[in-house]
Length: 289
Image 1 (cartoon, one colour):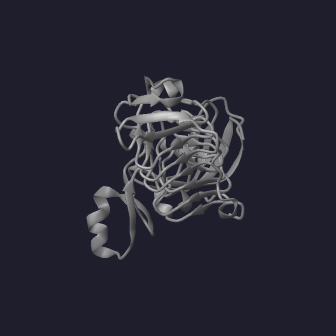
Image 2: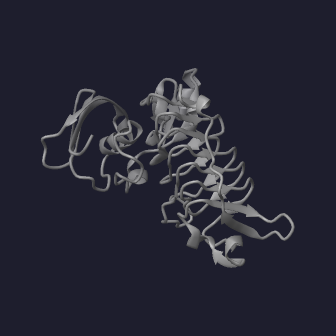
């Protein structure tokens, strides 16, 4: 699907504005600019130009387009989304305003899933060919390619995701895209673009392995491995064993293929070297999702 897009759905709203939108149909728009209309509970949204987000229907439509795999992470402009979307209480009876929570709890027996600007993806979009151990850990706006398995401790933010097939037992932060046949081990971390002033978008290539409790602040090319427990930030000083023990900042190695990152258990130095073997996913875990 390409822009311009027309989407129609059912809106939930109150006197303060929209709470959620369940888009049902998508087609090509014939409008000249972005706009939306509301008739009863039916909302029609036209996304013509990929501009910073100015309204809730457009924000929801862009999140839908990501989770439905029409656009990959970083292909849509999501600027302003945090200022546009309200912080809501997501329950088994639908979203409510945070300020209404106390009075509602006194009168109703319901389950609270989260207090957040984004709902669970699976409450609105369920892509085919995936497994998700805990649906509360995948936000609407995540992109999960076919064959992806998200284990119970795995997490995928909005505007982030996997090409598929992939195994995810770690965290895929906003803006990070993981290419096919890569594995994020338990507790592993990818540095996103939301906190700490980090504007550099990182990615993980094909056939990569992030060991348990490892992390990266640089991009990995294809066929790379990061040792369990090792966090490689852009400023980490790395000794390259294949090149006469040359020392460089990890940023200089960002995106390179066939790299093994590990810590020398005797000296404590963070090292890197070219690797000859190739990591492979267990196909039986993914091909029948």
